[in-house]
Every structure is written in C-alpha cells, then in structure tokens.
Image 1 (cartoon, rainbow, N blue to C red):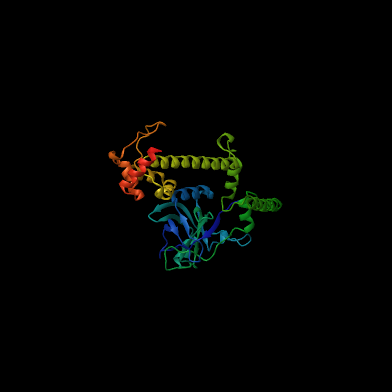
Image 2: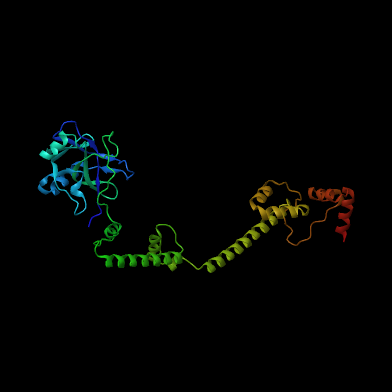
Length: 339
C-alpha cells in the first residue's frame, strides 16, 4: 500500500546524435503543461541513491512510449537503453545511458525525439523515486526543455487513497467501511458535544479538554457572589456614615471659628458633602465673620459693663450686623444688665 503517484514527464528533447549522457529531470520546483499541481525535487542525491538501490540490477530502464508501465496485458518490456548512473549538475539530474541496438537505431533514424522520465511523488508533489524513462514523441511543450506529457499512468484509485489514510489495505473493504462508519459516528457525537459545550472553531476539542482538566476553584480563595455583594453594600454604607461624620465635624469646626454663618449654611453643606477637601481648604483661609471669643465664664455671670466703657470689638460687629447704632446698643446692654 502506498500513497505515491506515478508520473511520466517528457522533460528533454534528445540531441540530434545519440549521446551516452542525457538530461533526465529538473531539480527544485517544476510544473507540467497539463494543469497538474507543481512538483518539487528538493533532495536530488537522496532520490538518486534510493532509485538506483531499489532498481533491479541497480539500473533503470528506458523503454518505448512507457509501454513497460502500461496496464497488465498491454506491456512491452523491450528496453531502448539502461540508466547506469545519475549525477546532479546545476539545476538538473544528468543520466549515464547504455543504449540497446534497437534504442540506438530508433535514435539514429529520428524515430523518437524526446526522453520522458518516470517518477513517483508524494501527495504534496515531492519527488521521491525515479523509476526509469521512455522515448516519446508527444511532449506537452516540445519547445521547452522542462516538459511533461499529458499522460498520468496508473493514478491512485480513490479507495486506495482512503485506505492509505486509514492505514488499512485497499483489499480489506469491510474494514474500510467499518472504520469510515465509526469515524462518521464520532464526528456526529463531536458535533453534539461542541454544540452542548457552546464552543466553536477548529480547536473545539482542545477547548473542551481544557475545561475538563481545569482545577476546581479553591473555596478559601473565593466567596459566593451574594456574600460579596452584601459586603460591598455594607462597606458602602459604612463609608457613607464615616463621610457624613467628617462633614458634620468640618461644618461644626467652621461654625466654632466664626467662619460659617447662617447665610452660608446651605452652600457650605453642599460643598462639604460633595468635596470635603475643597470645603476644608476654604475654611482654612476664610476670614472670621463672627468672633465668638473664648468660652471662659464656665457658667458664671459676665462682669457688668458701664456705659462709659463703650463697646468692645465683638459688640460693635453685632451692632453693625443688626443695623443698630452704638448708643442704642449701649442703652440696651445697660438695660439688660440691670435686670
């Protein structure tokens, strides 16, 4: 069982006179003229060694019109010559040839004009074995040195290709059918699994395996989402309470310092609630609007002031804000002290 495909390739026009050295096949990438995929011969010395080693008597046949490679019952094994050696020269393989009398006569009489190598290649087009050559007259492009005939002898049957991929002999049809049936069932099961797992792409199997082999989360490292959400709510409430306490403290401090008066309460409360740092910055530089003085009486009555003592600074501020003259304020103060 093999996956190699035999090709014949009318690659070279023969010289006018018979020569013991002929150009057999190009090295590297080359294309045929009949739309077959491109071929490659990347390891010419390896192919040369393998071809001569596997050939009967270590020589390769040159026949007429590739008849020795025809189907059974149609073969004509007469040789026109024998390839006794091959060497790589530049971008080609040159072959040393021993012509048979019949082959030399065909060349002398110009009965054949081209030589066509027979080789085997892998499905990717890589040439791996040279089986021989043939004298032909039907190259696809005779004006070129690297040509191919239109004939592809002994192509692989589809069943052989399938068997080769499955690793089963082509004549074991029951085994091939069973394997294909099993693969079809497996493909159907895989499609159902990928749909249930909601995975897509060519790496669906890898994704599913990754899920199956993933370690379970460590309970010590994670908490239920409900508990986490509840903790977040509690933390937010605690932060709000702490923030409110700080705002109240800052407002009270500004009042005690005489910088925050009733007409500024709404504005100050909004600013402190929104940006406490900004309010504290304002309070640090704001002027004292009402000097409350120090609380030193500790519940005792303040000393009596006479009218001759006049008003102190705080009393003058109060009188000014009340729109009362100093004399009227003195009279009122004296009246309150007499009570």
